Each structure stands twice: as C-alpha cells, then as structure tokens.
Image (cartoon, rainbow, N blue to C red; front, side, top):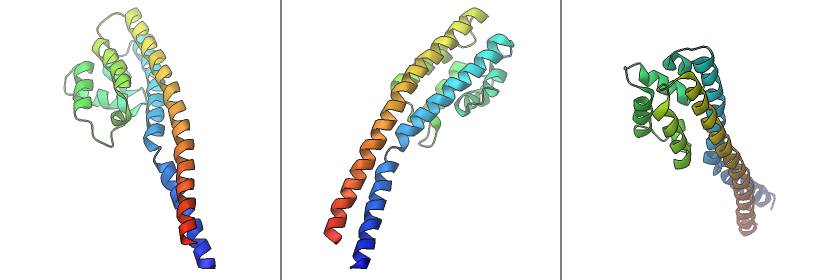
Length: 167
C-alpha cells in the first residue's frame, strides 16, 4: 500500500510539473519583450543621446535580439534588411520565435525606419516602439500568469485522477 501511495504522489507531482512546463512559451514571450523594451531604452540613449552609429548602438543594447541584428549588419546591410533576414531564418530556439505577429509588426515598423531620419524622429520612433512593446508586455505577463495557474491546476487534477486509479 505504501508503494502505491508513493507512486500516486509521484504521479501528481509529475503531472503538476508537466502542466507548469506547458507555460514555457508564455513566460519566454514576456521575457523577450521585457528584454526588448530595456534594450530599446539603452539603444535610444546610445543612438540619439550619444550619436553612436546604429550598429554600435544595437551592439551595446544588451538585448540578444538587437545584438543579432547588429551582427547581421556587419555584412553591410541595413537594419531593416538584417531584421528581415533574421525573421526569415528564425529557428525554434530563437528569441524571435516566441513573438506574436503583432509583436513582430511593431518591430517591423521600427526596423523599417531605424536610422533613416534625424535625431528627433528617431527619438520619437524608439519611444513609440517602447510604449507599444510595453503594452504587449503587459498582455504577455497577464497571459503567462493565467496560463501558469490554469495548466498547473489542470496538471494537478489529472495527476489526482491518475493517482486514484493507481490507489
């Protein structure tokens, strides 16, 4: 009987962990959006405040996604072309993979106009992008919290049902 109880507890625990693991994409999206907003703030400082070239400012942004764009710009392409190439070649493990179409649309607009106008226009572009991404981040954080609660509870309930069968 003790073995069955131990097995039932393991089943409940494993089911709860499986439910929790289903929320990985939700949490990753929120994490990527948080990194992007912080990176864009740093980019704004370096690009419009310190007048650094786009590629250098992107490299100093401390955001892996923005650094990837900078790395692709080393081949002599514009920020827009680097972003487009990066989104076409994205893999399952890439940070851009967890972004939704609306997130990508915001970034598409950013990279379409990045570096093509004066300091004030770039300042407005970056500020508008940060605000739009912060709104997306708020939604993503809410979705992640809801999904975490839902899938964790669902995993526990399924585990309890399986545990009842074992016991």
